[in-house]
Every structure is written in C-alpha cells, then in structure tokens.
Image (cartoon, rainbow, N blue to C red; front, side, top):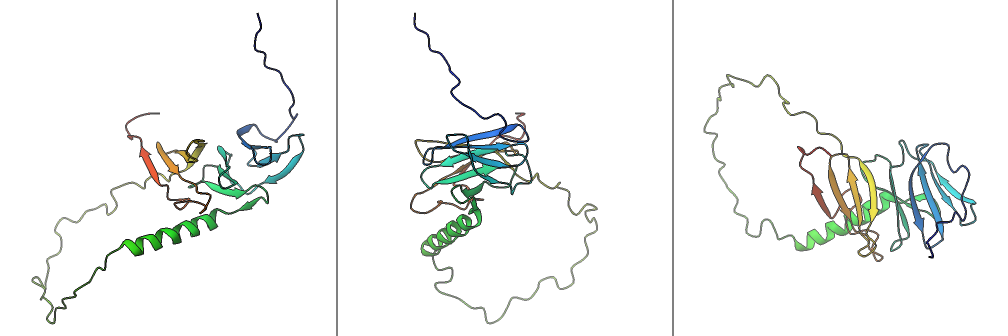
Length: 206
C-alpha cells in the first residue's frame, strides 16, 4: 500500500538570532519571508540566500502577510496598525498608503455631503442668557476622570483571504479588523482605519 511521505527537501540552519514567530510566502519573487523575536524581518531566495533585511521594529514580529494584488508586505509587531513595506526595495510605504486612502475618502465624502447651510437664517438679536449668574455645583465630582484610560489597541496577527484579497487582523483588545486592498488604489481605507471590524465582548475570556 502506497503511503504519502513528507520529505525534507531543504532548509536553513539559522535564519535569525531569535525564534521565528511569523512566516509568509511571496509567490511573485518566489521568496520566503520570516519574522522573529529578534525584531527583524528577513527575506530569503529559494536557494537559501538572504535577499534583504528589515530592522525597524520595536517589538517581536507577530504577523506577516504578503498581498499579491498590491505586491506589498503587511507586518505587525504589536503595532497600532499594520506596517506595510515594498519588499523589493525594503521601503516603508505605510504613511503613503494612509495619506492616499485618506485623501480619496475625503474626496468621496465631500461629493456626497449636502450643503449644511443651504438657506441660512441669521439671528439679528441673539437670545439672552436666561441664567446670567449660575450657582456653582454644590456636589462637584471629586474625580474629574472616573473612566480609566482604555487599552491601546495593538495588531497581533495577520491573515490574508486569498479569495477576496482582504487582510484580517486580530488585536489585543479582542477585536478583528478587516482591511481591503485594491490593485488600482493601494488600499480602500487608511491603514489605521479598517473597512470593517468585529468586536468580541469584553466579558469573554479568550
């Protein structure tokens, strides 16, 4: 009886100084891309040679995803939003994508927004203050900020849906963010403003 057998056909002895925490594949260039606890991303050719290295991270790489539609590399390192690079030049294009998408969204909103004052009705005589001498609050709140500072959201994992090209990002706040890429425009929404979100109830322990 014939059995399927898993064969080791290649590898690399030591890719990073720390454990590898994320891996993705670039089919356009036939590259393997690795991220590590050493806070580095390295791109490898199919013969095992290192193509380039990205070192501008302040934390462990927690997610990697290559997007063929835009030929971009999406990464997360406990960052507030995905970090996007052009892997061929190892260039950070996150700010460019944010600016491009924000400008497009503002233009769409401006066209769809109705005139807020189509028929102004000025008031020649402003209404007098009905209470010119208000009494101080007899019971001021001793704590002006009763609500604690919310936890800053950090992207932890990235996953690309091949059928739709969308990027799923899970966060430390028990939320799921969905980003959409377009081959015409880099993204349909700013990198820090996903097109859709799914919140997990805070009472649920994951």
